[in-house]
Length: 221
Image (cartoon, rainbow, N blue to C red; front, side, top):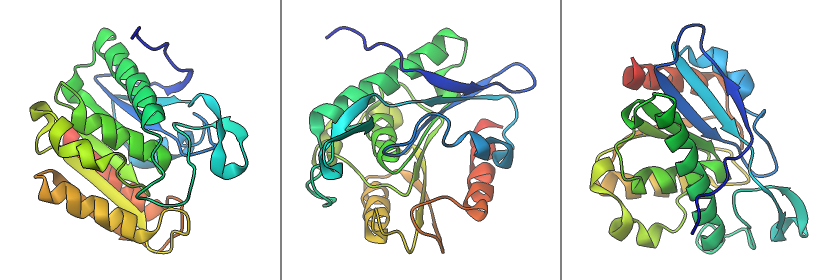
């Protein structure tokens, strides 16, 4: 398979020279602009933020409407809604963006991979299988995709990887149990999970961003 083309990205540069990077994947139907407003709240100095936009594809659960999506969703069932080919294609796009940061002088150990909802599923999928050690993974309002293959496919390089898992207790889109299940599965496999729940729906809130910023600064300095 040829290397995937780089996705279009919104990029936010730090005031000084970047010595770290955060690659952040949006949720279903959004785009690379969606999480730009949170950057000031995270207060991570010297990090470049990279917000790619997913390819536009038909999404079965939305009547086949074409929209930015990391993979197709056929039914609202956390155990059965995984378009494995789509997940793997998007994971390859994410790996290509990590490689581009390496080419721009950012070592993999200074890169955080983040995502919200569907983007969080792809971010977690790739982070735990990535061949080089990352700084950490951020999984917001999401769930594990292709979890049955994780134990066999996860890499030693990212064993014990720090993972921030945040979820809204009133989430109607990705039920709270999805976040709890992800937390428990990752903890059982030895990952360094930081778990936080919030009185919110399928969204982010200021308290979550403050907690996340503190976690990010601890890993990027």
